[in-house]
Length: 201
Length: 177
Image (tube, rainbow over all chains, first blue to last red):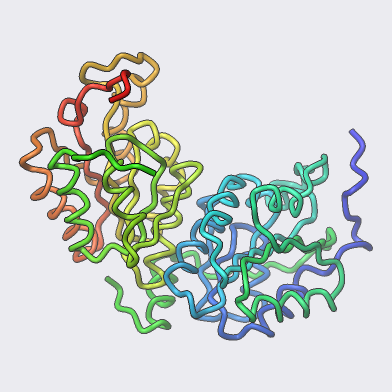
């Protein structure tokens, strides 16, 4: 099948640079990362207590970020995930649109492939246009981000908390060094809450 | 949206317990048995109601709410439990407090055989994924049992499902009132 939209390694942003720039510009943001490479990208940018790394629960990044955004309306909340993880939880975009939290920004690192399982093509290589899908679900502000300048603009927009933002960041198929955060979800949950001044339970 | 003129008392008990427990996010897939709690949540300025496309979103949502310092509940029908199974791994991997209230189908006077398979597997599916199941068939016990589930979830950090039996919920009525 023709896969004209697939980014090649020399197209698309360096995922690590894009995520590092975004997190660097949003030091106070609360972050949820989808399993696989987005979790590694966020961790490679430096550990922070207010990042919750998913190591499983595929499709859960956006719903977790939504619950967090509703609970913390005065903080910028970022969901950073990949095209495959987003596709598995695609219905959650309708739920996000219905709630329309002004402080939630969804960032999908789209390389058109399932990186964790051997770089099989994903649906975004086969015709699915995520920003169009998000717009169709009712999210008003949808963007495709293809340059580092646009990453900067995206960070500024997220920081404004002026409406739910959906951004597809076009990334290349670069090899990245492994950067694995701890897999202890209990510790991650408790340190995240402690950073917000909350007890374990 | 209209609310039934008089909800069964047990349905009123459900919302009263959730309100007194300080629940601030109510996630749900629409369901007749939960109609009163959903309507009350929508009308309450201190509660955010979140209508889901699939129940598994609700598992993620309540975990996100907890990360951000709020208590949340997931209201669903027994068929929805099947939609959640892998997402339940989030609860045990991270030991999130979890409260869900499940209206049962596929058991008492069920007219639709398609509800049977998941209805019969609901309790076992929850337990296989490490969730404690409390079941209520007597409307007089709804308040007490749900209150116990609230304490287990939010004071002890446990994962609890309260199943509301189909006999208590009542037969599905086809005619318009």
